[in-house]
Image 1 (cartoon, rainbow, N blue to C red):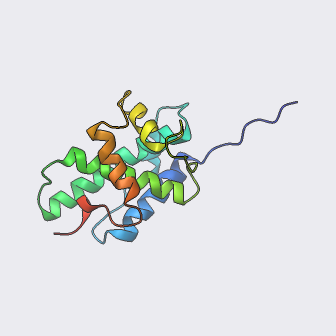
Image 2 (cartoon, rainbow, N blue to C red):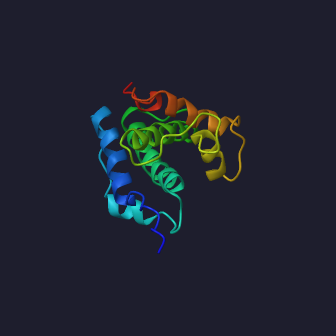
Image 3 (cartoon, rainbow, N blue to C red):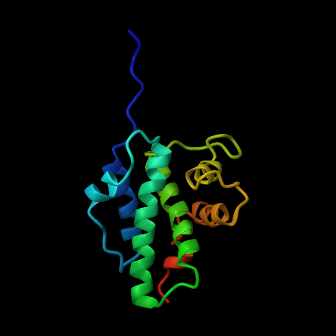
Length: 146
């Protein structure tokens, strides 16, 4: 009898790890409840796509908290995409998302482009993501206190 594939991390574990990264860097960040964040992920997603969905929710919340305290970003959408990249690297560092190979099918830039509906890894949206991913472990620039 074949062995079933190993289970990936629970979506609640992904959400908690990502919120922990935000809380460790941002004194103003107030975490969301992990259960509803994790439940918002459509079933049957790969761990990478689940991580992007969770990171997107958390990034929008983090940018909103920042902007309420320090004034609105010139581009909250770009800021949120950069934070998604940061959070994806956080999940990878925690061992919850596989470590990718650059320019391979598992490259997070390629996967994030797919998550966004098939955007090129050179699109502005994926460039925003890449800035946050490669900036790890520094605090994402859009979330710094002003």
